[in-house]
Every structure is written in C-alpha cells, then in structure tokens.
Amino acid sequence: MAEADRKQAAPLPAAEAPFDAIGLAKSLLRKTRAGALATLERDGGAPFASLVTVATDHDGTPLMLLSRLSAHTLNLEADPRCSVLLSQGGKGDPLAHPRLTVTGTAERSTEPRVRARFLARHPKAALYADFPDFAFFRLAVRAGHLNGGFARAATLTGPELLADLAGLEALAESEPAAVAHMNEDHLDAIGLYATRLAGEGPGPWRLTGLDPEGLDLVAGERTARVTFPQRLATPAALRPTLVAMAAEARAVPGPTDSP
Image (cartoon, rainbow, N blue to C red; front, side, top):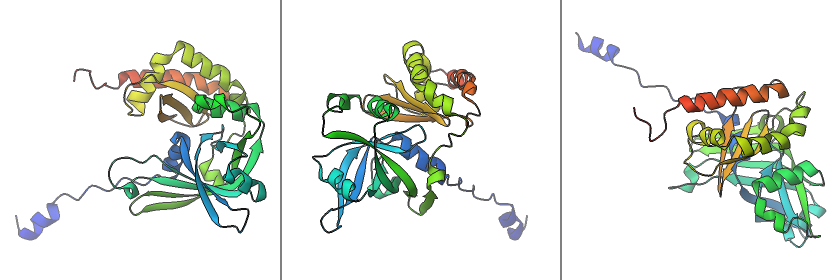
C-alpha cells in the first residue's frame, strides 16, 4: 500500500462528546448544598460575598434560609438583586471543575413547600429555622453563567435553567407523600438509583425531593441527582418511571458483581 493510502486509511480520532451546558448547569443547581451569595452593600453599593446554604424549589429555583442579623440579608432588603455561585469542587485545580453563577432577585417566602424542601436538604437547619430573625428566600432566576471547565462556558436564560411545571402542578402537591413512601418502603431502590445510575458510592441514601426532571438524593453530607430518562409528561407517569429505573439499576453490574 502506498504511503498516501496508508495515511488515508488511518483511523480518525474520536469526536469529543458534546457539551451539555443545560444538563450540567441543572445538575449543579440541584446537587450543590452551599454557595457564595453576592449582594450589594446597602451603604455604597460595593459587592459583598458570603457563604450560604442552598436548596431548590420544585422547579429548581434556589432557596436560602437567611438571618436578618446577617449583613447579606440587610443588603437584600435594600436591593434584592443578587447572585449565587455554586460549585461542587474536587481534587486538583479548582478552575478545572464546573461552576454555575445564578443571577436574579431575592424574594422572601412563607410558602410551606419552600420550608419543607429546604429542611429536607438541610435537616439540621430545623434547629433555628423558626427563630424570629430567620426567613426563607427564593432567588427569582434571571439568568445563569456556566463555566464547565477549561474552554467550556455558556450563558443560560432563566427558563433554560428551571423545570417547566406546566400541567404538572399535581406532582408538587403529591411530592411529600411520594418522598415519604419511597424513604419508608423503597430504600433499596433509592440506593440503586444513587450507586448504579448516578455513579455514587454506597451510603444511607434517601430521597429529599422529586420534580418533573429527576430525583434529589442525600447520604449524610453527600448529594446526588438522578435524572429521569425523559421528562414526566403527567403526574401519573412517576410510578412507572421509578419502577422502570429500579429495574434498569438492578441490571447494571455493581462493583462487587462478577463479570
């Protein structure tokens, strides 16, 4: 074979996997338990950053429990514009790991659902959630900026970051009962979702929330996000989807399974 033919026949390098900016951003939004809240100082408007714990509402809207004794809460009362930086971090270069900045305005909330979802993700916060100086806040999302690692970045709109709840209002209403049922009767399936489908290590995994796009799990300080094969079309699709996912998870070989 001629040299030119040999060069022509050489295998082509594998194409790089596409960058799923929306999927990665939503995963960071749902999995990250704490972030840097940036507010504007009420005296002068200088940027002010502080560490806060974060959960998400049913559609993915960031939720925070803030004390009025904190400077960032006083800042938000004067100007509700803010942003939250979310990052899972990891070993090696911090800049090699994905992070998401969500921008918008902070709104105080007294909705029972907001309280329940936040405390499901941060149960220890129940010790002080009812103190008179504490209040729950929702960050009404305007946009997001994702840095997925070197040479991977994207600016996303609010609707791209959040789950569409149209026609699925009943799912939010049934969420507490569904979560309680899964944690009481199906911890084995939840563990399989985490280890076989999300690739997490073993642990006392339990369900903290569900929405049209997936499940939120925790095991101690660890979190996991398990996305559904496809977005739920109706609330009635939840049960068959969970059953099918459990069957899929059982079919995936575990680390101790024989080849």
